[in-house]
Length: 118
Length: 106
Image (cartoon, rainbow over all chains, first blue to last red; front, side):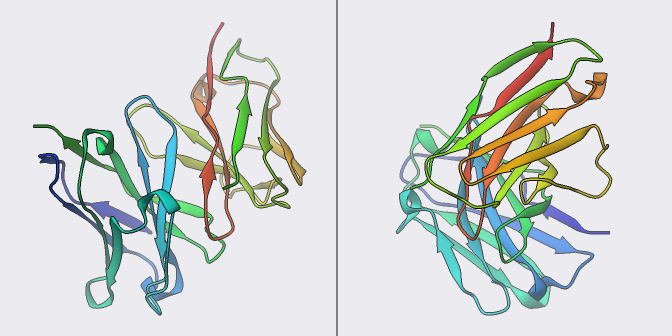
């Protein structure tokens, strides 16, 4: 069965970076994209970026340009999301999701809480 | 950027009620619209894609309609498991979510 399992919760200081992993299984990794979405406390989801593991093509939401890097490691079928220059506004649960080329997300990871606090 | 606006933000209903949630796009998105259900502490769950296609395994009481800029999600007869928050999501490479509609017990 399709599974996306994310790394554990993180606590970071302002200005630091965080890297969250998303280990996938149960499907052909290169046949689907991986999207990253975050959700701040009490807020709706926010689309961050997408990567095509087959060719490394990426797309980022404008507000994260220059601060967000999404990558994949095909041998381990794992996707990564790195967010730099963290502020308290980045405190959120971060989700990875398997995505079609259209961007539609059907399977999601369990979420990773990232807390940014001094 | 395309903005997605949902209404209402909160909806009070009883088991058995018919419920309708509206989502408007700031410009035409054709039928690139999905609906998700989310419960506290959980990831969103896909209900509807391409505006009106029911995801496999989702009960038939859920339905979606619309195209262009106006979309609706309907629940024909609300069940206890349906009390949750619902989000519309425009996709087609880039994505934008609506702000959500919380369906609560009346």
